[in-house]
Structure formats: structure tokens, C-alpha cells
Length: 274
Length: 253
Image (cartoon, one colour):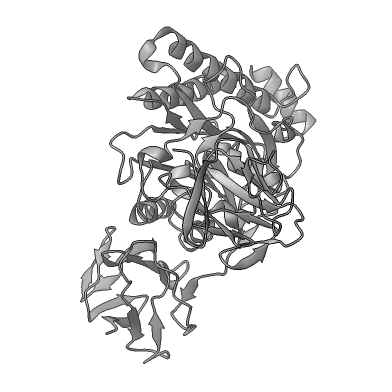
């Protein structure tokens, strides 16, 4: 089964209750199993510009590259094409934003976080920079899969501060990596096997700062039969709790397996097709 | 405004110390940033480590110890208005930085250009097909109430900070084998119905309770009217009907 039929994807974004601008950008491409979410930062409307560039570079470039190749093939460097595509294009987006910020004074210092997933061959490749997250609901277990690039996460990792105390910290929202701030960026990349029934949540910190992980998980678990309603409920909960930041969510439900057929004959035939 | 410590003894303020350094030392010897010339104070008694807007107090193995807010401690994550006691001396910690809950402006995400701590340099990226380990598994209990047979009473969730007290609402079954059973709507979301047949969700929000269709061919009925795809706010004593079960929604006094 192809990725488009195997996945159900919905996305929603909302400025929240306090901000006048929405600096988040989201996009997905069901055809190629790609989702992108970016949370921009920078004065005036520069945040929107940064996250907008990131999302459009990823969406258009990945689509273009995957017209001719399968993300499950091995690339020239020995890793999956899918992984290479994500890394190269996060770097490409980084350079576009960095150059725009350098050349136009009103965009100086703009940047964005990003989390992007490419679903192929019963796996999902995830690249992220900053504190936008991917979570997974598998059965009863809801857990974060990405680890924030933030000062607080580093402090938790190094044992300076416990997870519980971290909630009291005044150093929230300080990211240690972002797209577009420097000439190069190193996205963190992982590949995870997916199972039928999994639900993946990509979100900006406007969700997980306002709603406890436990409540997000419970909502997804309860409303897994209606993904669009689940997305609406998550945004409503963030806004009911204060909605102090823009809130964006993308939900991906795995309805069936989408493994790439691996037989010799299949490959042979597809080779002739091109 | 950096956070600061205010030194006092017997209610008399002696001096104010802004926490501008990463490490501020407290002790009897004069080389300490906060020198307290008193024999009950060890020569290097304690230190306050400040990382941007957060400060941590640490006793350095002093002879007479330190306490914060009356509790003896080794290490403590300082919060605004904490009172540190060293012998007869008191140090009040003041950090009136706007917190997450008071200033929208402050919460804007910012980038730290240089790693603050060299020990926590960014990890090398990994691309192996390995599951990332995460210790923070958040298993959650199943909150679905299928057919509303459960009468489990949950401890009400603490209301969000600043929110008015949440009203307690109850759903009572009016027909079928569960006649008379009551379900307290103590969670933010409660699902009703049979999965695969007809499910609706009841959302508790600051301004009331709302019922929304989740799945199934038929929509729930409220007082005999189909609610369609849209959420419907429930009023006291509304009659809800779904999957053949009638129930009454009411607010507890």
C-alpha cells in the first residue's frame, strides 16, 4: 500500500489567546508522507518569514526530489535517501533564512525551530532543530520522541535540575539550536519503526507548554477515531489554559503498513518503468 | 534586573548582593563574595550558582549547615522570596523576573548563541535505525468510559492556575441495564458510547461543558435534536441520547 493511503494526516494552527501574529508554519504532503512544522522567532513579522521559508523549502524540495527516487533507496553516502533529503533540506532552509536575515535589516536575527517527518517503508525519519516536538501514541503509551535542543533539556540531561523542578524554571524558551541563526546547522536525525495504529503528534511549544503531556496523551487516546476533532481539542485545551503562544499540531495516524516491496522481480519491473 | 540576595540579621538589612556572577560564594573568609564575619559561619560555607534567570543554592559542607525556608538543605533550586538561613543570618532571595505566567513578551523563544555549559555540548547526530531511548514514558490510564458502565470516581484534576473553580457536572443514565448509574465529569474530556458504533466526547472547558460527535453514522441527540458535527454546550438537565442510551446532564450544587 502506498503512503498516501496508509496515513491519515490532519494539521491545525492557531495564533493563541495573546499573540497577534502566528509565527508558526505547518505543511504536509500526503503523497510523499512528509510533514513539516516550524515555530519562527524574531521581531516584527520576521518570525513568520523564517518559519514560512523553512516550511516551503522543505515541502517543495522534498517533493521535487522524491518524484524520481524512493526515500527507501540507498543514497550515495550509504544512508537512506529519505534521511539525506531531510538533512540536506533543513540545511538548505537554514542557508536561505540566514541569507535573507543578512541581506535585509528588518529580518536580522530571525530564526525558526523545525520538526519534520518523512514516512516511508514502515518507518519515519525525523529531523528536528530546537524545541518543536514529535510525540508518539502507541497503544496506551504516549511519549515524546524528540529531545528538545533547549537550555532546560540540557540541564535536565546533565542532572543540574530535575524534571519536576524544571517546571519552575525561568529559563524556558531558550533554545540552543535554531534554523537560520548561523551559516550552518546540524539537525538531529533519527529513524523509527512505525506500527499500524500509531499516532504521531508534531507540535510547537505552544501546545506542550500549556497542556501537560498526560492530558495530551489522554486526548489523543480518547479521540483517535476522529483525528480532526483531536487536533481541535488539543488547540482548545492550550487556549483554555491561557494560550500564551501560537499553537500548531500535525497528527499522523498509521492506518496500514506501507512497506516498500522488496522482491527482486518488483525492483526489476520498476527499473523498466523509469 | 538580576536576581539578588538581601543579607539581614535580627530583622535589620545589612546589604544587598546582585547575583551577577555564575558563582557567588558565601563564607566567613573575606575572599567570599558575601563575607559574613561570624564564627557560626564556615570559612567557605555555601555558594549560589546562577544560570541566566535561575539560581541554585548549595551548602559546601559547612560545619553548622544551611537551611531554606526553615528546612535544612544541601542543595536547593531558589524561588522568589526564599529565605536562606546561615547561623543567625538570613539571606532573602529576590527574583522578580516576569515568569511564564505574567509576561507574554518574556516567553518569546530566544536562541542561545553559544553553549552555556561546555559539558553539555550538542550530541553528535545519530542516524541508526535505533529506537531512541526515553526515560520519560508517560503512560496514561485509559479514560474512555465505554457505555458509561464505569462509576469510577476520579480525583478532580487541579484547575489551571488562575481559573475559576470548576463546577462539578454529572451524567446519569436514564434507561437500559445501567439505569440510575451516575458518572461524574471530573476530567477535561470524557468519552461516551461504544467505539465503532457511536462515540461522543464531553469536554469540560472554563465556560462550560460541550458535547461533540466523535465517530459513528448517527449524531448524538440533545433534547431530541441531532447536534450534527458541531460542539453543543450542555445546559443543566439536558437529555443526551446516543447509541440507544438516554442520559441526563446536570450540575451539582
